[in-house]
Image (cartoon, rainbow, N blue to C red; front, side):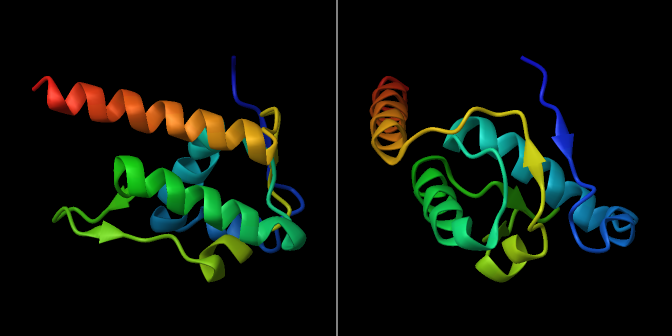
Length: 115
């Protein structure tokens, strides 16, 4: 499935996308939506989005690192900059996400024990 996104409702999106760090963050955020089952960024959904990203990073590590491999943790403040972003990704309910992330964590644990 191709990811389609709409950034036109994000405040000052043109300025944000002219900054390389913002471009990288934006790309990581949109692609993380596939795994965490979120399709858009809204003020009312920031807490849930943040919670899901934190749970994902606890299993797989940070979505972003510096060029010196220092992890960059995503904050609610950073997420708020992207309110209005929407994608065509089908949302997962909280129960579906819980099952999904547990399944991924079990698979990850199993794979790492085989190494």
